[in-house]
Amino acid sequence: MTVKFFGAAAIILSSWIIGVMLSMKSRFRLDDLEELKKAVTFFLNDAVNVSMPLSEVFGDIAKRTNGAVSMVFEDAGKLAEMKNEKCAGDVFKKAVDKNLRELYFEADDMDCLYSFAANLDCAYKAQQRDNAQLLLENIRLIQINLNDKALKERRLYNSAGILCGILTCVILF
Amino acid sequence: MSIKDEIIFLSGGRIRDVLDCISASEFEEFEEIRFRVGKPSFVKKRGNEYFLLSSGAISLHQDSAFVAEAGDIKTFINILSGYSLYAFEEELKNGYITVEGGHRIGVSGKTVVENGNVMSLNSFSGINIRISHEIKGCAENVLPYITEGQGVFNTLIVSPPGVGKTTLLRDIIRLLSIKGKNVSVADERGEIAGSWQGKAYNDLGPRADILDCCPKKEGMLMLLRSMSPDVIAVDELGSDEEIKAVETILSGGVSVICTVHGNSAEDALKRTGISKSGCAESFDRFIELCRKGNGKIEAVIRDLHGNTVGKEAIR
Image (cartoon, rainbow over all chains, first blue to last red; front, side, top):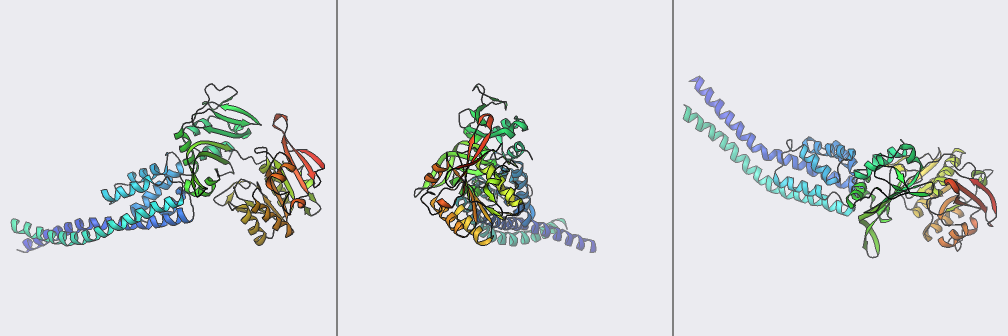
């Protein structure tokens, strides 16, 4: 009986943990989006207000951000310094693609990032500012939708995890 | 870092491949390298023009000259600016980018005009790499003519483009700075000091204060107010506002050394409007640069009345 009790508890616990992990996926994505938002704010200051060249802008952002987003900007800075790509868009896309596995971004986020990259090659600071502000606005909209989704998912997966555990116990015992 | 290394480091694409084939020693002698979309490329060496071949060699014959495509020019400019054309927005309005080492990259293309003002350039059709040469000591022969005791004469250096005004001005600044003068430099185009991200790549001596990429008029007045200079140096004086700023500086008792485009001092004074301004008679020395055979440059030094006080070889 004791063995059965502890076995059932272990099953329910692990099932609940799986549920929590699944609900955390949106949380990780939200964290990455928040970090990207921070990076774009730094970008606005460095590129538009201080007129720093992109290689330095990317390097500076990499130092001031964390996680996979920081890695993207670090790689973009290195690629820009190597001067082997034809344009800034190619540099940034390559850096994003290199770190794709580390990022929790989904299709919508990637579209925004690629669109940002495609508009990096502009001759005006005003264009650069508009490009960054568009990305910030897109991030904001994604975050609003994702926050609601994350809340629902947390409840759903947490409950589903526990229920699945109980169901497994009922079937097994 | 050699001139070749500086240019190669900044460039990219097919143009870099061609430039990379040129020997470093030959690169030192180049004054200009021109690329135009769909046209043969040229180099200017010791005042003479040659075709630049795809192999990196130079020739008087057009056969197998390197022909740049629109994409080559665009890639070159993109990479040259560090993928950051927006950071050169103000310079592009004037049709050039000054890069690390003080080299000036002139660009041509389609202008974007708003309310009659050029806002930017795009669809680039050609580039002219004007190679900056730092020739230390080239002003040694000229210096005695523009200094008297502890004083420095107000001096105007005149020549057509590409003869060496900036090179001479740079060395005059360096020598005056070594001699103990506080020389303030309003370096609007970044060509004198060759500044890049705040670091001066050309030697202007120990007492030179550089205001990089600041419009000349504002720069000269800022330096006058803030740096208590003995001499203010400025390259390519031209607009009425700049001449008025020079008048202010002269009335403040500070010496001015500046360069101006022209075939002669008289021509330059008339063309720029200095002759009509209040400072026309304040210039004590005029240095006219002219190209002699074998790429040699001669400086003819005249006084206020146009009398020749000396002739000296610059290089």
